[in-house]
Amino acid sequence: MTEINYDDVLSIMEKEMRNASKIFFEEEPHKNFKMKGKNDYVTVVDFKVQEYLKEKLLKLIDTSTLLAEEDGFDKTDFSKYTWILDPVDGTTNLFHGLNHSVISLAFMEDEKIVIGAIYDPFTDEFFKAIKNKGAYLNGKKISVSDVDDFNKALIGVGTGGSRLNRTDETFDMLRFIFENTAGVRRIGSAALEIVYVACGRYDGFIEDGLNLWDYAAAKLIAEEAGGVVFDMHGEEINTQRKGGIICGNKVVTGELRRFIY
Image (cartoon, rainbow, N blue to C red; front, side, top):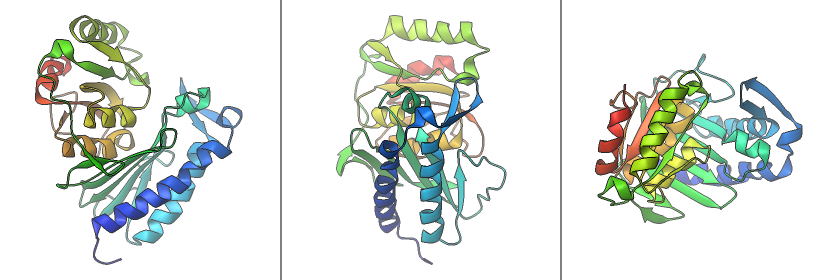
C-alpha cells in the first residue's frame, strides 16, 4: 500500500479488531495469566489479541512498525508509519470478570496520530476518528458534553499503580472532585473512560502515569469530538513518553488544571 487512504485503513482496522475481540470470549484469562508487577496482570487474551492484530496490521502496510503493550518501546521506529496497540486496556477488569475492557488501536504517520479506534466487545461499541474528520460511535457523530458548571460535571478519575507512592495527594484530588462535582467514576480502563468523555457520558477525565498505548487512540477521538486534551504538566500530549492525561470540555479542563504539576 503506497498511498495511505485513512478511510480504507480504518475500515480494515474495525474488521480485524472485531475479529480479534472473539478471543475475549474464547479464553479463561483468570486461569492463564502472569503478574508484571503489583496489580499489573497480563493474560492469555492480551497475548493472543496482540499476536493476531500484529500479523494483520504489519501485512496491511508493510513499511509500518508496531508498538504494543506486551512488546514495549525498545524496538519501535516512529519515523514513518506506526501502529499503537493495547490489546486489552482494562486487563485487571478482564481477569476479575468485570466487563469493562477494550481493544485500543491508533495509527501514526510521521509521529502524528491520524487514526484512532476503540472497540468494546462487551457492548459492541466502536469508537473511531480520523484526524480532522470528527469522532464517531457506531457510525454516529459524537461530541463532548456542553456542561458549563463544574459542580454539575461527572468526572472519571484513574488511580493507577504509578500513584501508589502519592497516596495523600491522590486522595486530596479525589476529595476535591467528590465535593465539587456531580460525582466521581472509576472504571479501570483509561481508553474507555476517555472515549466516554468524547461521547458525553463523562464530562471530564484525569489519570496520571499512562503509557502511549493507553491513550493514543482515545486522545484523537476525544480531540475530534471537540475535547480539550493535555498532560499532567498542562502541556500538549507527547506521543513518545509516559505521562498523564486530562480531558473534557473547556470549562471542565479549566477546573482540572489545578492538579497539574
